[in-house]
Image (cartoon, rainbow, N blue to C red; front, side, top):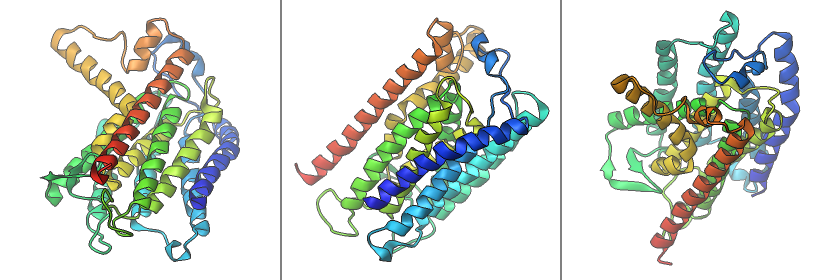
Length: 358
């Protein structure tokens, strides 16, 4: 437990301390955010705010995870695990795609960065590499991921072949990384919501660690790999998001940019895959799902009827144009995330009670 607290604490402290340094450095380099011309007029004042703050989140997460290993109570478990390294690879890889996107936006002084094809290829390379490695590197016959669709644990009848698993895993990773990216439209919204979902995965993965079938076969135990290491990654990411939120909350001094949003979305999807809770993430990350659906519905309905369902998509801009202040939207969307996380954790615990016969 001490190592988990250290991972979260270091992620928090490093993010709080290094974000101001990033703000000053990005300002000197003229790395300011470009704002959509068709967005709410209140956002135009944010033009020039330093972006690419996601680099701090990613760095704090990696460093917090690495240092926490030095404090594991069982020194035999000090070494890095496949699950932990793959999760960080996914986060850093998706963050790199986002970094290139942010850099091009700044360089060309427009709100569009990488074209759709380039971003798709980048996400494809990272996501497919993660998926292949996750089902190809066994440890005592257990791989980091399972080629079975999962909810709170694997759903045996929904077993996939390796090829189909890689395809669906990529779609899942790309979907959630873009979902967080769409949600990152208001100060602190994505960082605060992500911190709560990462917190839920700290609880889930640590519970799996204390009820791991590899340690003791009991009713309701979990067939997962490296659950403690997964907990360290989730804890470090949670702390990094909270530390960044100190500077990112309204009015934001810095934005995470695509560097942060793609990295966070990729890590969330990776955590769901290695903990066998893929469908549960749809509940825990209900806000991200709702925001993405608002865009899909808006585009599909407009193409079919030339009319709009929402005043503007993504969903948070609809409420802004309806008269809500930015702070009101953010706080209420955080509350929605908190309720989704509480409900998701309830489903997770109810499943354990059922299997444990309690």
